[in-house]
Amino acid sequence: MKTFNEKLYNESKRELSKKSEFLGYYYSPTLTVLKQFLKSLKNKKILEIGYKDALFLDYLKDKGANVYGIDTNPEKTNKSLIKANIEKLSPKFLKENKNKFHAIIERITLSRLYEENYYLETGKHRFKNKDKILSNIYKLLKPNGVLVLQDDRGSIFTESQFKKFKLKKIMKEIPVIFKDKKGKNLGWNVLVVYKR
Image (cartoon, rainbow, N blue to C red):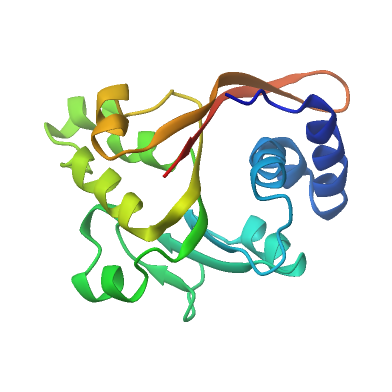
C-alpha cells in the first residue's frame, strides 16, 4: 500500500495556487494522488463526480488529460460535462463509457448528497442506493483505474461495499488540513484511493 507523497503534495499545491487559491488549497491532494498513481496526465481520461464549475477539470485539460464531468447541478455543460446523477446513469451512458476512465475523482460531493442533516430534515437521502453508485463507478473505471475520494466527512461507503465491487484500497485514509498563507485553518478532508 502506497503512502501519500508529501513532497509531491507541496509541488502540486504551488502549481495549482498559480491558477487559483481555491485549487491550491482544496485540489492539491487530489492532484498529488493523480500524479502519484497515473505518473502522467497526458491523454489520461479523468472523470470528476460533482465538478460544479469544472475549474480543476480545466486545469487537467491544460495538462493534456481528456476530462469529463457529471454533476446534478452544473454551472456549465458541454459534450464532456453533463448534467447527471452518478446513481442514476442511463444504460446508454454506461455502455458508451464502460471501462473508459483511468481515474474517477470525487471531492466532497457524495457525502454532501447523502448527508444526514438532509435526511433528518426531509426523511430521505438524496442518494438512495450506495451499491448502485459503486457499481456505476466500477463499470466506468478501466481495469487498474483509480478512484480518488477526498471528503470532509469520510466515506459514505463501508469497506465491505468496496470489496463487493472489487475496489482495492491502495492508499490508506490520510487527513489533509487546509491552511491559508497566514496559517489560518480553512478546514480538513480525508483522502483515500482505491483501484479497480
